[in-house]
Amino acid sequence: MWMVSLGPKDGVAVAANVPTGREVFVQNCALCHVHGVAMAPRMDSQAEWGPRLSLGRQVLLNSVLRGKGGMPPKGGNASISDSQAAAGLDYMLEAVTGQSGQARVAKGR
Image (tube, rainbow, N blue to C red; front, side):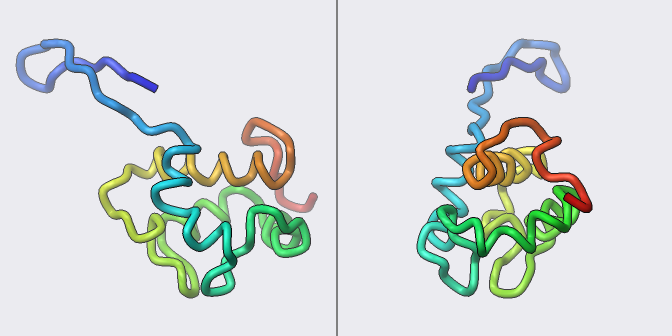
């Protein structure tokens, strides 16, 4: 995805390459979440994701941003923004649940 933004000082349009959720996943999350490294829930395992999904998206996002267990904050890449990390999480949640949109994981479901 490409995003155009205005420069902070002169108002000149600048193109910025913003990675998609899939790209964030591939670059920062896949190593552990494809193979289950360090107890990371694997992408193809509903059983491993089930208890986590019941916590809700915000709790999961907090874990992504702050780190949890063997997972460092933002999958070890401090250079990605919080919104990019969230896009990576949403990509994983969509792959696991088969549903799109942030409503796919709601507390208590």
